[in-house]
Image (spheres, rainbow, N blue to C red):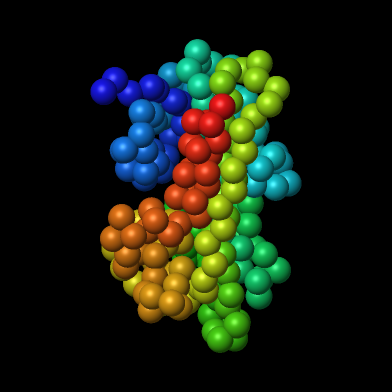
Length: 199
């Protein structure tokens, strides 16, 4: 089966792999915007959805393919929702995943560990082209808690400290299959693909 290509408005290869795994049984295939030398858009929005739309519009202006963009992050209730939309740059504009993770761990250590409720949120959008005025939008939310001791080797970003009470483990301790079944990005993508297919 020849797959229909969709550009992902991101150069994050971990995200590309994760989404392609989720799409493996569909007719779609994700390619990163870096293949077109697209410069990442400045995320000036105040919500995950606004940032996803900014990234999607930017990528759509530089390619003839349809575009998917997502903006996602983690919200910690006891930190008033932080890092939130700043999850990818929590420790600074050019911070690595490890630096962001370490900063959140240090801030969690100052909190009452019993009340560290948190959630991953993903807003995802699909544009047919740069002139598309009716983007398809989907959102996924994954509830859990954050812990100050990282566990697990799978996943990326904040996965090692995102604890799922019902399973007794962190996101980074889950198999890729189980994580994709539960995750905020998995939820959003399945809903998005359903909406695209229903058109």
